[in-house]
Length: 171
Image (cartoon, rainbow, N blue to C red):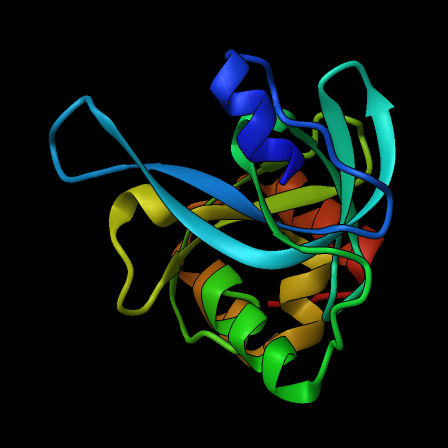
């Protein structure tokens, strides 16, 4: 209700900690420069992080991220009964279910110096949906696949040595 009232006045919506919201995931559509949104969720509002920014929690794995209010839509109040069926819907909408990796496209250092990231192409998804993932996460989920993909890449001896030293991965 708050969102509809705010929208009618041209204001940004307001949410309460405990509310459930849908989050817009913006992605490029085909070759057009226009953007299209897909809605994921529901997510639980856990904080009002900053002005117009809310902390929202993934109801499946508990991860929290900050999202601008313009990318949020009200779903339900705090009385929502979060069932396993609802979590399954969330996994499907968010893409956090087990997806098959098609290939590892690139590798690079994390900006915060915490190790390496790999760019993953997901089977059945478009190029603009490739994602950068922590190498450690991919190694934990699919060690043989990661080793196979790293062998295909033309990596410097320094990078190979760093991966071996930091992660214990020999490829």
